[in-house]
Length: 411
Image (cartoon, helix red, strand yellow):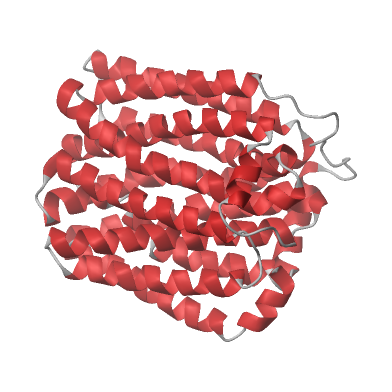
C-alpha cells in the first residue's frame, strides 16, 4: 500500500473526525501518563536509592503484558475494542487516584508503589492490543501509515512535555501534584472517547469459531510461521530487551552517573522525547511503506551505537545528543515495525498479532530493566546497557542478511 508523501499525509489522517477526536484526547492522557511515570521513578529512587528497585518497578509496570498480552489480543479480536479502551482508562484513573491518596496521607511505601504499578501494568496489557487494533477503524486504508506514525508523535511529544511538567510539579508540589495531574488527564481522554462515533460494523470482531485458548494458540502459530512477521518480532525482542530499558534506568543515570537530581532526570527524559518526536514526524511525512524494512534495520543499528556513546561518557554535553539520536531511532524503528505488522497481518489475526507486538514492546524492557538493574548493583549502570547494545548489533547483522526476503513479505 502506498500513500502520498509529505506533510499532506499527516493532515489527511487528522481530518478524519473520529481519529482527530481520539488523537486530541490521547495527547492529553499521554502527557499525564509520562508525568506520572517520571514521578513514580523518582519516588522509587527516593524510597530506596537502589538501581535494583528501579528495575523492579519498571518490571512491575511492563511485565504483566507478557502474561496477559495473548489473552488481551484474543479479547481485542472478540469484543468491542472501543469499550475495552474506555474500561481500561477508567481503571487507570483509579490507580492514579490511589497513588495520589497514599502520597498525600504519607503512607506510600515501595511495596505500595510496586503493587499499584503492577496493577497499572495489568490494565495497560489489556488496553494496548485494543488500542492498536482500533486505529484502522478510525481512518481509511490510505491514511493508516500516517495515523500509526502520528500516534507515535503524540506519544513521544508527551515523553517530552510530560517529564518537563513532572520536573516542575515535583519541585513545586511534590510527586502528589504529578499524580493529581495524571488523574485529570484520564478524565479528559474518557470524555474524548465518549464522542467517537464509529460506523456500524467498522471494527466488528471476527466471528468466534473456536475456544479462547485455541484462538491464542492460532494467533501465536500464525505469527511465528509467517515468513516476515516471525523474524520481525524476533528482531524486536532483541531491541526491546537489549536497548529499550535505557528509558527506565534514566533515574539511576541522572542520580548516580551525572549527579543532576530531578531537573537532570527531566532533561534526560525530555531529550529522548524530543528526538523521538522528530523521528516520528520524519516517519509520518515519509508516507510510504516501500523501503521501510531497511529503514527499521538501519535505525535499530544506530540506536545501539548511540547508546554505546551515552554509556561511555559522564559528560552531559556528550550524553544529551546521544540520547536525542537514540530517541529518534527508537521511534523510527518501533513505529516502522508496527506499520509493517499492520500492513502484513491478516485482518482476522490483527488483535492477536498486535498483542504480541505489545507483549514484546512492554515485556522486553521489563525483563531488560530488571536484569540490568540487578547487575548494576555490582557493576554500575553502564556495563549492562553496553552489553544490551551489543546484542542489538548482532541481531541487526543477522536480519540484514535476509533483508530483501523480509521486505518482500512485509512491504
